[in-house]
Length: 238
Image (cartoon, rainbow, N blue to C red; front, top):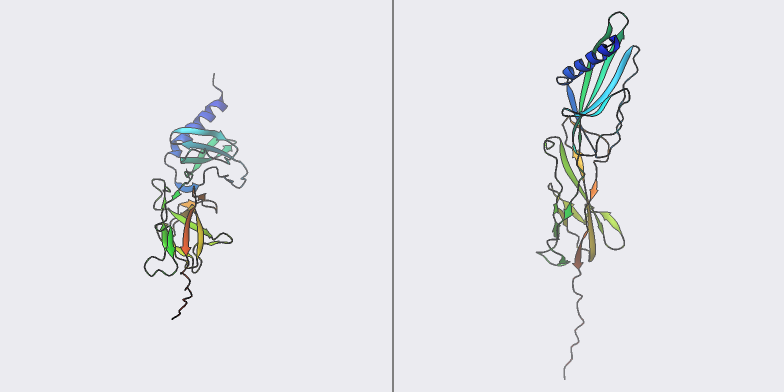
């Protein structure tokens, strides 16, 4: 025989499932493995429960403890926050539900293509730079309006590592291609990093401050050769 308490709990769950399909939702992007911090103010007489679902599949059942992590499998997960009130006269008041969607981003990975010129001369007037093209990093489907990829490069000449876009060193174009344009002789090792970045003006938020960075699987080298030194010409006559 079902008790009154059991009936009330079942009614609450059924009503929650009904409301959760229509409740307003916001979308957040999170790095794979990120730690979440979810909280609500304590309200006297209000019972708060949390549930995590992926589509119709329950990931974490209704619990009084807010989730701190999401599955590491990339995809969209919905966190439902259920607010209900125990009324002394009528029992459980119908709950309000807050629904937020969290997109777990795939871990980025990418490669650096071979330099367009593995070697170029300091004094060459036509070939005086080398272009390196990144491949492999992509945005997950559906995030293109909210996110973009941001590439950074470092350049090491054997003794010093500098930002790849420092004056006189190189530049990055809008697609992430890197151009080494220094005219200082030496062998330069180029390393790259890519991360997610929230586009300006979009409300779907990328949480955290790191952007889930990933380093290129390998580095590339370019050699800038010096202008040949003028030889000493010995002239004699007999």
